[in-house]
Length: 261
Image (tube, rainbow, N blue to C red; front, side, top):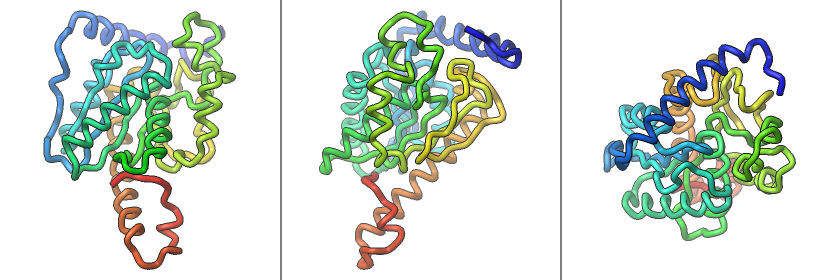
């Protein structure tokens, strides 16, 4: 594996942060305590990445709560080693629970790395159930939608899913209808995903800061996630109005795919 000179410092800082979070998640057996406002208009389901427990998402969750949102972490995933399809079933049940507890709220998924892939799978699967609550969107932070060439260097089926040639990545890429509801937040340099680019059909922003894990605890990334959540919320509202508008051929109506309440 070749590491570019500019990545050396990024690797060091990134793994120092990840090591602290892994240690904390190993020693901390409590259940998540961060839930935010029960009456919040937007409820966020935060999905951690591979080999991560829910603790990795807690710094970001706290920032979202301070912004006035409700949050739901997903300890049910453990270290998120299950295949993406199986993990999506777990998150799908969590979304059902959030929708039942907050019927008037809009739900937005926020996923880190593998969590973003799981989130898109949830969008796709729930769109097949018109009567189910539909998330307003997905914010994917440092997510390898096109895979990572470095996945080929590591053992374990839970890593091999990120190989650019994997079947699950191809299947997710083919589901283009969900892409309009996906917002990406990409680090400037991501040592786990060399050359990570914005996939065609999705929108997003590139951070000034670097790292695969550290953005989970930075203000810059949190602000970008909050902006993407606000955009998903606004778009869902516009689509809801378009569905009841008499002008069925209006641009707003035509631009809406299956979306949240």
